[in-house]
Length: 364
Image (cartoon, rainbow, N blue to C red; front, side):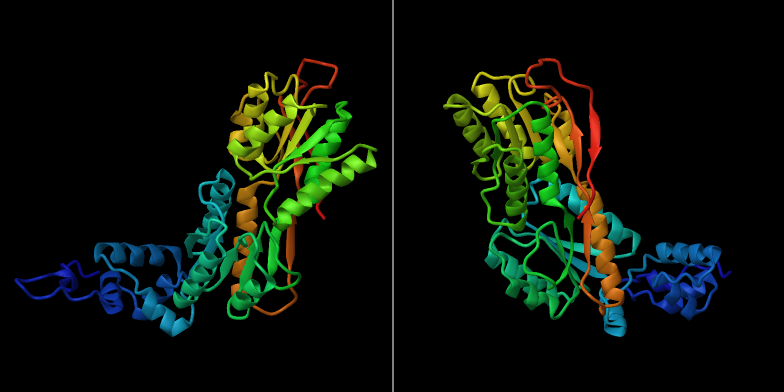
């Protein structure tokens, strides 16, 4: 192979630097221009040793692949738009990490946006994603989103709804069985001897909030018990306040099942503020099983849905839709599991936490 310095990256005096071309890379690697093109498009047709030689030449020449030009030729940008409602949330951090990992394996990159539950911002982001010619969108709809939101984007681009669902059959969906999740958590508390069980949080008008409250209420009613919803925003401060007030009021609950893990951690604080001990005087169950759940004190019982796995499933489904847009809409439901830890692993008439155990629930 020619070992001379590649003139393509040299600059002399005030002359502008000439852009490196595929022909330059081909000459440096000792291959054809077509082979370089195949390597850049990550084709499996190129032998591994040849691919590495081409990549080495690309690095040596400091070549930057022009995705804009490639998009004009292929019609694909190899980018994906991802929209979530709260980037400060541990749950959405784990979800987007799963999406990013799956896209990276496929040689794609995400444009990430946060709506903060703002419908106007969601509309702006969707419009900008179309302007950027993304190949598809993964969307967690903001509170109050309507089926028209989905039609505006799904008529033009492959779109996957994740976690929350708006309308029926308008776009593919990846989520969990939220009703089953709270049914598992509520049944666990009833089995531990609790009768005054309250649900904390879920004030937002979303499919997730409705389903989680419905699963709790149905299980309570089936057991002949009266549901009690302590509605509040899904924040630690709000759940701490409503938990404290309930525990200091008449007929205080002996157990709390919460909309999500941050709500449950806030309820633990409210329990302390009411002079009670979480996991000893009051049983507490969260939802999502984020990484912080096992690290709280006491360790939080939670309904696990593996947000990273949800994200990977959503990305994989979108990638398949990008390749082939036809066929019926699909739903992927990741089944919830109840993971029992010290915050609820005791019977009402006991003070000693039980060992950790895991109960599995089927999808639906």
